[in-house]
Amino acid sequence: MTTQNTNTVDSSWTMFIEILSDEFAAKTGFGVYAHITPVDADQAYQQYQLRNAPMRLFVREYVRRYA
Image (tube, helix red, strand yellow):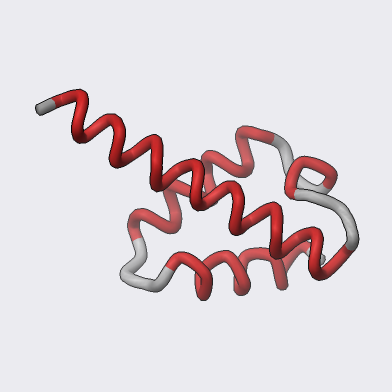
């Protein structure tokens, strides 16, 4: 059961980073790590998990603050 939960978290994290990088690239021409540190990306993911918002909407708003 732990493996399944870990896979879900890993999948969600991967999707979050891909969407975050795509959004930064679309807005600025550079991916996520050109703008924020890995620690910042992790904190953004934790913020996303605490909010009841769709991932893409959260990412769009997050990137808007940095781009």
